[in-house]
Length: 336
Image 1 (cartoon, rainbow, N blue to C red):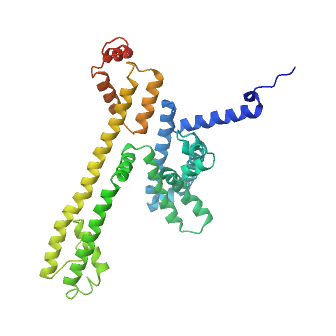
Image 2: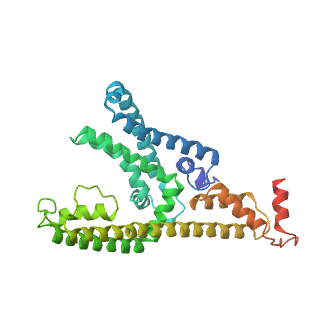
Image 3: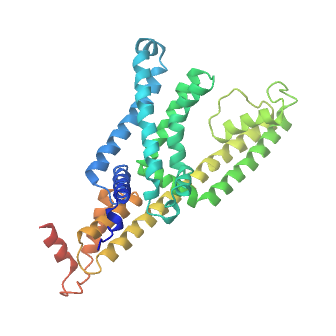
């Protein structure tokens, strides 16, 4: 009597298993959950260095004598960079189904969902100018300058840019209200200065849209001096606009600063809750440490901040449910 082989021993199943294992390994290598710190740091450092060098190359290539002398080297470096960034994009698209979120698990819709995410769009824009230059007749100088868009890829590795994105989403209503108020003041001041100055300077303040340039420059307290009111009412309007400008600059800055502080507080609190949950049994095993590290990276907290929160939780004086001793003793014994 023959016995059927288990399904997982079938060659096609073994091949699918190897493919899934390789895909998950690549996902971890690109910074996914449950990653190897050393491997991720090496890959991250390489990509960050490549992005910085690309931005530097765009800047240096704009210098005419450097572009003439080292044009072939700049072109070769751009080709290598495009190949690496294209490969990175394809690998991230391939491994998107490994994201720890059910919305991404579908092999087609999950990848499409990832492709429409902000960071995926930035990754695509980093290489798109090169391919557009091959397919469409465009000004090559404009294409070369567009390579500077690769600097936005640093947002994946920068805590500040990640936090600012979260702040923008969190404070969207407040920022929208500030922008609305600024637009109202812009239209009002430009209309008034046109009313006061048009007759005295018809070629300078020729219409309200032109006067909006003066209003923007004055509200931002730059004062270029290319458009200057000469009538008494115009100068009074200019002084009033300049005073309003101080408040208009301070208002969005205050909103962003308070939002940034609140976002960091929320992230520290989330990490503190994760630490307290992990310390419920009085110890930190390896799996719990991996979970905390995953949480730290997702919240974009630095190692120093995470260590401080962990130390505060351990030294808070909670008693271990097993031995009725302070948790700080377990922490010290593990460090020893």
